[in-house]
Image (cartoon, rainbow, N blue to C red; front, side, top):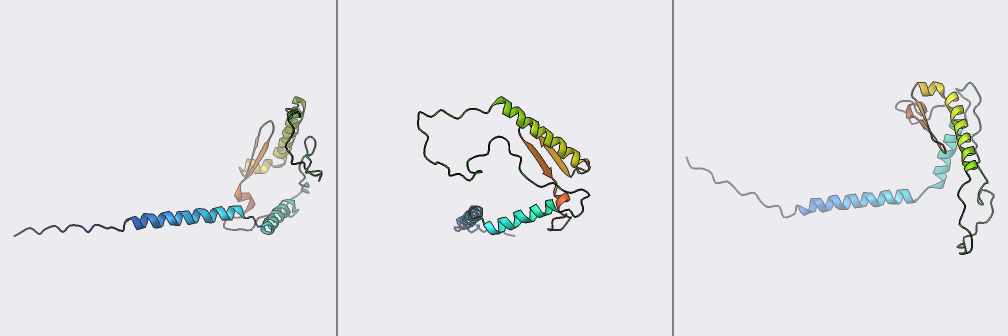
Length: 161
């Protein structure tokens, strides 16, 4: 019996088209993401902010009244905080460079952060024991990580009280 001749595979001259289509799709996705990041809908942002603030200030489900969420002011507030116009001109060469923060102010800030961290740890101790909240601290900052299982019930998009 004679052997069959092996047919040569057809060379696909359009294989570049798949790579090109993938590249164009990725480029389109990149520009869509860039556009989405660049345009902030202030109305939706305000609604989100108000909803989260209302959820944290809600008394429903809490035994004690929650404290107002006011930022702690350390040092002198900036010009924009006092609603004064900001001078956008370049400083002259004769002006002295800004001074480094005073060591005493840094120590006061560290004490304030340490006090806040202690108060938060005391208040959130049941959630910390259940590993729902994690508090990390440094001399000048405090980070509170709230796990999503505390904020949202499983399979739901509604924030819990």
